[in-house]
Structure formats: C-alpha cells, structure tokens
Length: 550
Image (cartoon, rainbow, N blue to C red):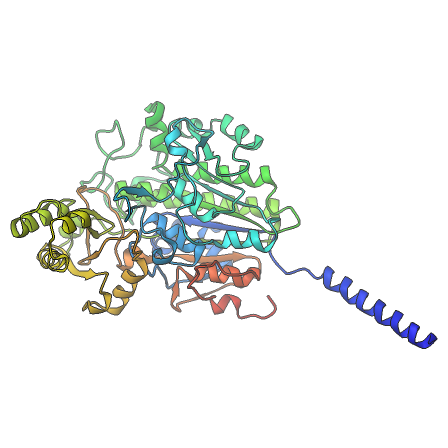
C-alpha cells in the first residue's frame, strides 16, 4: 500500500511537472507585425528609381529581406478597397463583398461606399459625414482579426492611413482603432465604432499641427531637374496642376494654400507619406506596440502615392521625386522600428493594393495602341436599347467596368431579360477599346483567356456586382480625364505588385514563383501560427514558411 501511494505521488508530480512545462511553452512570434501598403505602387518602381535610392530604404528591404518578384492581384477590379481587403483577408471580392471602392446594392439600387456605416459617427474631425465609417460591409475576417482572436484579444491592432478605407479594412472588425486623415481639419480622426478612438496621445499628435508645418514647406525637387532621367519633361500635357497653379511644374507652392484646399492637397504630396508615417510612430509609441507580452499589429497604408499618380501619371518627375522621398521616409521608419521594438523582433511586409497604367495620350504620342473609354457608356447603351425596346434607362449603372441592369423596369415592362442582355452585349462589343464582354451569370460560356475569366469570377459578388463585366483592350481605361492615370483592369501594369518581407525569421532572397495577393494573409497565418482568415483562399508562400524551425 505504501508503494502504491508513493507511485501515485510520483505520477501526480510527473503530470504536474508536465503541465507546468507545457504552460511555460510560448509560440514563437515577433513582437510586432507591420504591414505597409503603398497605394498605386507599380512593381517596377522598386527598380526604376533604384540608382538613387538610399542604402537604408527600399534597397535595405531587398538586400536583407525576401522579395516575391512575381506577385499579382487575382481578381477584378484592381481598385484600392478590394486591394486592401484582399491583402488582409487573403480573399477576393466574390467572398469579401468589397466589390469596389463603391458598388450598387442589389436590394436598394443605391451607390454604396465600401466603408460607409450610418450607425456610427465621426470622432476627432470636423466633417461628420466623413466619420460615418467602419468595416461592417466586409463579410470576412482579416489576419488582424484572427490575431486578436488567437491571443484572446491580448494582441493590439491599429490602422493608420490618409484614406479611411486604407486604414479601416486592413485593421479589420476587431481592431482597437483605425485612424484616417480628415481634410476639413488637418487632424487624424476615427469613428465611435472603436472602443477608444481618441486617446490622449492622438490629441497630442493632432495638436502638433504637423500638416500645417509640412504644407508650409513648398514641394521642391531633391535634385536638379535635369537629373530626373526616368521621367518626362517637367512641363507636359499629361499632367494636371494643383489648385491655384497655372502649370504642373516645380516648385509647387503649397505654402500659398489655405483652409481645406491646403489639407486636401497634402494628400497628393510626399508630405502626406511623411505625415502618415509620423502618425504611425505616434500610434506605436502611444500604445507601446511591440513592447507588451503579446504580438501586436500595425497596419500602415501610404495613400499619397495614389493621389500623385492619378494627377501626374507614372512617368512624371513628381512620381520619381515622390518615390525618392518615400525611400528616405521608409529608411527613417525602419530605423525607428529598430530602435523602439528591436532589430529582428518585428516582421514587416511591404506591398501595394494595385498598380497604374501609362497615360493613354502619352502612349499614343509614342505610336503605341491605347485609348480612353469615356464615361458615357451607360448613356450610349441606353440609347441603343431604347431604339430597340422602346424603354429608356434599361441600364441603371456602369460601375467598376460592370453593367447593372434596371431589373424593376425590365420586369414591369415584361421585356425578355435575356434578349435585353444579349442586345447590350452586342452593342458593347462594337464600342471602341472593348476586348470582351463577359456575362457573369454564365461565366463558363465566355470565350476569354482563362486567367482573365478567373479574375472576373473572383471579383463577382452577386449582391454587389454588375451583370456584365467589360474587359478593355490593353492600354485602355475608362475616364473622362485626359491627364494623369488610373487603374482597375486585369493588365500587368495594374495587377503586378511588389511584395517584400523583412525582419523576424526572414532570410534574404527572392523568388519569381507565382504568388497571388491572397497568399499574403495565408503566409502571415503560417508564420504567426494562427488560423487563416475565414474567407482565405490563398496558400502560404513555401519559400518563407518551409523551414520547420520557424
């Protein structure tokens, strides 16, 4: 009996010891994850201006990090909101519901903005309408949501951007807060969707009036204009001047702007990126991110690159100088993370939500095929359909390169819907610049290259997308504006994006293996040992996750 009791005691001690050892085991994770999305950054910008990049910015990321050189968007349309949601959900608009920056709601027929939420209100800004924002329109979880769930909400998640959608969608449904720029006040603001949207540190940061200080400095070139050999002449017909300017040339006299015009303009200046990264530092310091017991996540989106691209097009001196200055800001931010979180204690990835096309007139002047589809397609289709069926406005919207039909009118008029649809397809096919028209209700019937067909299917949400997907010829896009550029198509200039991993457990290297945007979130889940987002269709990148020691 004595031996039996002793054996039981030893067994109890052994199990107790095992329990203690198990409790002491901690999953290996970085102290902080930092996601940087450079809005409208074409993949080739990593290399186009590299001769004058510093050793500590983009070059450091490429030299010491791991670059996925063949990363692409795998859905349509290639816009900002689907891009930011795609990166962080590992999913596509068909599943996330983020079918564009805007879309037409099937039930109401109304135009919906991606982060609209009438049930919440602005906190910390002046324009109350701009604060009615939240992630509620996104149907899926994000990798940031999954990190919060996996750590029983000990992980802290914050989003920072000039654009509201660039902050809100990455930070996800369960974020501690998301902050964006209010151009009516020059402050960063939030909404009361979040539990603590205006902490003391944010009030202190806004009180610095950094936007005013940055706008007081005119945008002058870093170097002599003659050395900007990767760009077109400074004064050309492909660019749009800033408000108050006679021509779009340097120096840009931003110090002359006042009021809302000043704050609206900073969004399209290198100063906007500087402001955003300073705000990211303030958030990290104020919340002591990466300095607690759990892994934190900071989502940063740099929106100014998109605004300046739209205004000046990819070949402008402004774009070249923007990226040379961004390179310096990135280098400064890396030094900040090294100092505050610790080298090799944070995991950083840098990518983009989409790229951008060359200006069509610029290509035409070089004798390359290109063109603009004017925004009157809806009007011209309706005129053709009225001539055939005697009813006006059978097409209700043309949005995201998609045709939405007026279903109520077609039904009430007792028209054959399939005939109306076929007539619209026939007419659109005859429109200049159109390559294909895809009936999204019968996608397998489309005689379209499989890659493009799959992208269209991935982007089609049956409650938010149009019935017909219009695919333009290469070099074409829809716009009434002849200056600058835009994006949204399937072509490599819009969908080939940078993806560089840096820091914690990342060995230097590069791959040209095919990687999709949706693989980013899956890879983060593998590295962090947490569940993928609930709509994720991506796969972990083997070159980053194949080492079992991670």
